[in-house]
Length: 169
Image 1: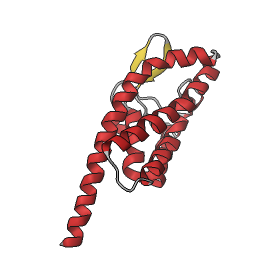
Image 2: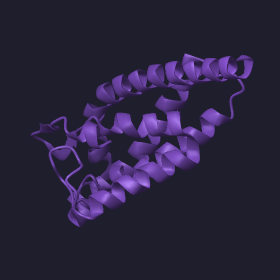
Image 3: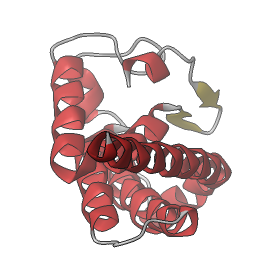
């Protein structure tokens, strides 16, 4: 998450919520670490941010980010990681399609479920207007979910192979 925060945010003229790569890290945390560790990693990350470490994209940090327009997205990080880890653990066989479906539906949807209402509240905008503004994030989030799905699939597949090799050896 900290490394992804080093990538400068893409700011948009019509919204204070930037496009960042850190949502990719949230999806990876849930998919790779699982529900419990994914949640804990994201909660720890947010505690470090709250303590003032400039770990968010653009070098942001401190308690103030949790009352700004992106606060809802930030608060969703541990929940999204836990939800993705939980849902992916329910599959006997994980295919790339299943991982992508979970990342797109549960992951991206949950980020928006928390992020958009908080953004609307903080900016004092109607919810429908904020939803329209947020449509600009969808292409990037679809790409990030796709990349994360591929990485999770490959990493989990290699882990299974390594375990089988270790048992045989």
